[in-house]
Length: 198
Image (cartoon, rainbow, N blue to C red; front, side):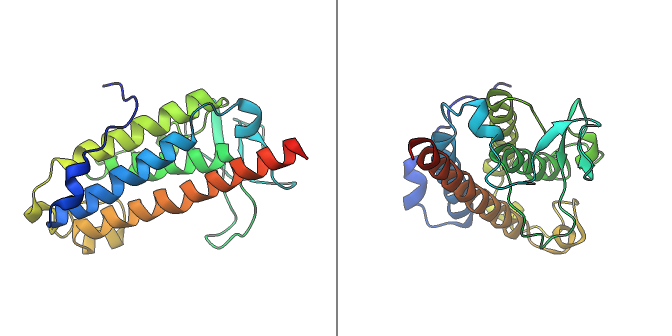
């Protein structure tokens, strides 16, 4: 299935149930980020806000730990608290990883991990298309669940935490990932435009 511009059901904001709460936040957050990803040029997508920023690279073209399948890989930070800067390309690849792997271990075949998935792309168009598909598949899966299924413990098997938590908590976690990294992308776009006009 091809995913295009995100549709958003504004009525979801008036429905007082857990499915509407988590899917409304997911849908609106994606609508906002998707708008900020439009007309993203390759130069800006790959722009390093500081020397040594994490980015995407051709396989074999980086000295950092590389993650993902395919001809391009995402450079991976040294640890979870690595404060280093990131490119928009890296942020997009990370979000593809987050949504694609969680989809696989919730609605998919429970086989593929981040190194089995194509995460990184050399162009903005390809990166945004991959993210649009990953978020679209996740949204379709989440929006098809009942309230009882949202409270099911262990519905996702991606991590030990996922296995022990009601599924709605995982949806909220991925919503936070989308909001957090989407905000970083928006700030990087602002900084790039400011730099270009200075």
